[in-house]
Amino acid sequence: MFRVSSSPHIKEKVNTNDIMRDVVIAMVPTTLMGAYNNYRLFGTYYSVRSILLVLVAIISCVLAEFLFNKITKRESTIGDLSAVVTGMILALNLPVTFPFWMTVLGSFFAIIVVKQLFGGLGQNFMNPALGARCFLVLSFAKEMTAFFPDNVKGIDAAASATPLTALKNASDTSISYMDLFIGKHAGTIGETSIIALLIGVAYLLIKRVIELRVPLTYIAVFSVCILVFNNNFSPDFLVRHLMGGGLIFGAFYMATDYTTSPMTRAGRFIYGALLGILTAIIRTFGNTAEGVSFAIIFCNLLVPLIEKYTVPRAFGIKRGGRSNE
Image 1: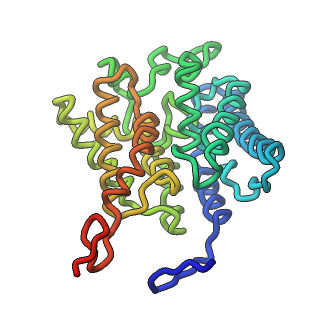
Image 2: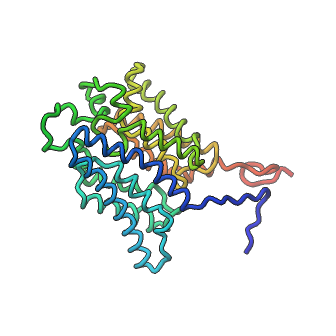
Image 3: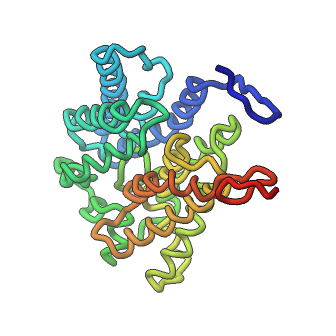
């Protein structure tokens, strides 16, 4: 059967493997900076451990995909590197103290439950890595918030709190903007260093892997909402919300996921706005100081509805599919 569509017909040379490889390359700076910051904060052991955690997640995701395809007698898809991307994103969303066996469990959940059981790449209804992260948060809340190793001595106890936790609890928020930008503070492995994240974003933009409608709308709407909801219009308050958590990581690396974000232009603006509103609501009124992961997977569920009402109409066709003639 031939697929009939209107011209122009454009065929891209870029394939899934190329896109996934670029995403992996883009996340290398934040992975290395995460290891470096853990070295500065907690020592050599935790620097090495952060790299091992990333490797464990990647290997577990690839293994889970290989085994599932083998058991179900499907063609192997590990060569498209999507499992590698899922493993990296999941690991970078974990604290450096997170147990390895829980990382393996989360990786298998991401690949088998969220991705493969719904048809594989392109069919999953939510971002696999974020689905797994939320599963781990609900299952192992204590371990997922253990940002400060218990056996590390000589560091002020205030360092055990993330900047967002300190902000929410109205405690000490004296950490400098430079430390926020570089990532010298408690948090997950990949969310802390803004400069490393932005280097990766620049690479993705140069390679045209992502575009800016979703992330910029997300950040802009979030900025307005977080100020209004908290009745706090201090620039310092906003900067700490933008740089002190996983907003930059989520906006550019996860909210832009091809499968779980809208394809229509108008839909991307709506999607980004909903992400901003929901993240601000969770951070302001929820029990957690974060909110990015839950906001993204919730809005993933709304994507089919968003696309239904934002699909472009063909010339001469009224809404509802009727001709003007």
